[in-house]
Structure formats: structure tokens, C-alpha cells
Image (cartoon, rainbow, N blue to C red; front, side, top):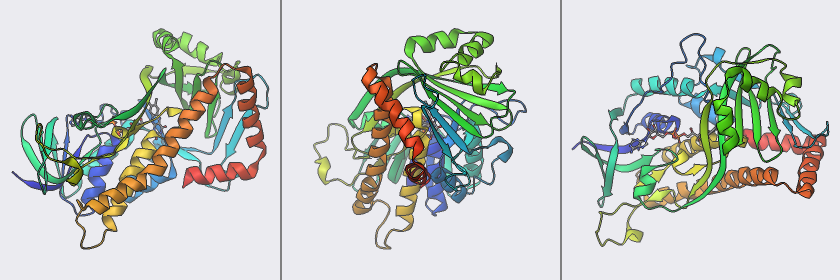
Length: 411
Ligand SMILES: Cc1cc2nc3c(=O)[nH]c(=O)nc-3n(C[C@H](O)[C@H](O)[C@H](O)COP(=O)(O)OP(=O)(O)OC[C@H]3O[C@@H](n4cnc5c(N)ncnc54)[C@H](O)[C@@H]3O)c2cc1C
């Protein structure tokens, strides 16, 4: 059995970034996933992935550090320079406007296709020394005094630690019986891309619609926008059944026709795709895997499993922050390993507890803010409606508060 420093499980963006960052620190990494293929070839001209992400400055910084950012095709990356958020009243001034220019920053975010990031990361991991890739599925794992043993469908591997980035349904989290705080929003996000005739000027629009739905139109490189419509389940099913013309028409009528004001013509260019929306917070991100039925006291054992990305936390996409938070998990762990004292190995218990503490504030704060915003805007009460829309208006008048929010978001 070959011994590795780390076994990374999962080949989503979090898993690939983790494997790359760890190998760039000189660690021997075994990367296991059922498939490494991003599944969509965005290099074929004229094709656009309907899964897109708003990347924050922290994600861009990590991708740059991994030497992936410069390798990406920048003609497919759109800078967001303005963000306009509308409340659910009919008042024309219930709007919150963030501007990179007013905040004296180069941009508020970048919009990138998911498969574009995955493909570039995939190429980088293939060429990176220190990564062994195995196309396989993890079936079970158990830990010994100094190592963790991972059983896949085809073989068994051993390492000091296992980093699980195996997504929102994380089989690792399940196997460890880690409890979660879970909240089903009973909404489905429908995503699709549209061609536009009016220039978007790098503006991202978001409408809080009556009934708690949230519609975002994000600018894509060229003359395209990406729709993320967080709709009630039944409405989402209706949207998914609509033909291209009916859907475009339906979208133009949204937000009291406010969409039409900004984009008079919309032409569907990708098939709409659904994503059920939940909030999940793992109560622990470090895990200990004793042998099944063994009578070991787990509290005395060194945790040898770390949950990262959606395996640790899933949130509503209204703030476009889920992946950004997962990539900050990767960046934090990388920094801790890099800066560790020479007498500490990567499975040092103090080091792992430091990591756990370092992620708590960021994760709790983002999950709380997105959850509260979703709830605030899904209430029917007229009083709350008045308060939330007034909140938007007041915040919009304070350049200082907006600058503070932007600085925080860019940190
Ligand atoms: C509509 C929508 C819009 C969003 N927009 C944004 C945005 O603008 N910005 C943002 O930051 N975030 C956004 N998010 C959140 C983002 O999509 C997720 O946070 C991100 O995709 C999570 O990536 P991940 O790598 O952690 O998990 P995943 O992408 O789910 O990857 C999990 C991996 O684990 C593998 N795996 C599973 N089981 C096993 C096993 N047993 N053995 C081995 N491997 C296994 C899978 O094959 C897969 O490769 C959005 C989410 C939604 C739903």
C-alpha cells in the first residue's frame, strides 16, 4: 500500500483547488473522484455553460496563487462593475446600487462559467507534480493511530489526512454521522443564459419579487446574461416546461416589467437547469473515523478527516457566495499548513483545531446573512415589506455604508 500525505475526495472546484494547493506545498496527494471531467466543453465556439459563478476577490486571489487565473480564457470572463438590487414594492426608488467606480475599486466581482474554472483547474492538476489521480468512488474509511485508510471500489489507500470535498450530499459526512443544521427553502433555482441586444455594461441585476422569489440577471462576456431565478417549486416546474419564447416573455414581465426596462429583448441560448435550494451547516468540520463497532473513545483520537466546500456548508445563492466560501476553506487550510511551525506535521491536532476555529466566523456569518435575507424577503407581511424596502432605500443613500459593505465583500 502506497502512503500519501493527503487523500482529497471529490473533483468539483473545491476538490481540484484543494489537491492543487496541497501539492504546490510539496505534499504527496492522492486525488479520488468518480469522474474528473467537467462535463461541458466550453471551448466549443458559441457554447455557453449555464452554470456560472460570481467570483469574489478572495477566490480570484486563490486561483491566481494556484497559477490558474492567468491560464483562463479572459475573453470568457466578465467583470462586474455595478450591482443593482430592487425591492418588491412598486416605488421607483426602492433600489440599492453598488458601483465599483464610487467605491474606488477596479471591480465588484467576476462572472465565470463553472466548466471554464473546472477545465483550467483540471489541466493544472494533471501537470502538477505530487498529485496521483484515481477515478474511483470512496466506499469506506477507518483510522489507525497514525493514518487513515480509505477503501474505494477498486483498492485501499493510506494517508495522514483525508480532505473531503464531496459536495452537499457528502457521503463522508454521512458515514461520520456528523449532524447538520438543514433548512429546505422549498425553492428551486432555474438557471439559463440569454442573448441580449442592449449592452449590459457589466451590471448585475437582482430583483426581490413578491412571494419571496429572487431573480438575478448576471452579465456574461459578450452580449449575454445569465438568469438565476430562485422560484417556488411549482413555479420553477412551470418555468422548466416553458418553450424558449414563452420563457423569455415570462422573464420580461418579471419585477413589474422592470426586466423589460433593462433588457427589451432576450433570446434563450441554453436549456434551463434546476437546482433545489437548501441551507446545510455541518455541526463539525473535523471528523474521527474509528473502526465500525470498535469501542475506541473517539474524543482522544486525532481527527483525520476535514470537510471542505459544500460538504461543510451550503447556502442560498442569493448572495452568490457558496463556492467563494469553499475556496476560502482551501485558502485557509493552505495558509495554515504553509505557516506551520517546523515541529508540527500536517496531522498535528493543534493545527487542525486552529483550522476549525479559523473557518467558524466566516461560515456562520455568511450562512446567517443569506438565510436572514431570504426570510426577510419571503414574508408576506405589509409591515415587513415596508421595512425591508425602506432599508434598501436608506442604505442606498449612504455612500459610507455601501463602501464598507463593498470593502467587506472584497476582503
Ligand atoms: C443556482 C446556484 C447558483 C450559484 N451561484 C454561485 C455563485 O455565483 N458564486 C458562488 O461562489 N457560489 C455559487 N453557488 C454555490 C456553488 O455552486 C457551490 O458552492 C459549489 O459548486 C460547491 O462546489 P464543491 O466542489 O464543494 O462541491 P461539488 O461541485 O458538488 O463537487 C463534489 C464532488 O464530489 C464527488 N463525490 C461525491 N461522492 C463521492 C465519493 N463517494 N467518492 C469520491 N468522490 C465523490 C462528486 O463526483 C463531485 O466531483 C451557486 C449554487 C447554486 C445552486
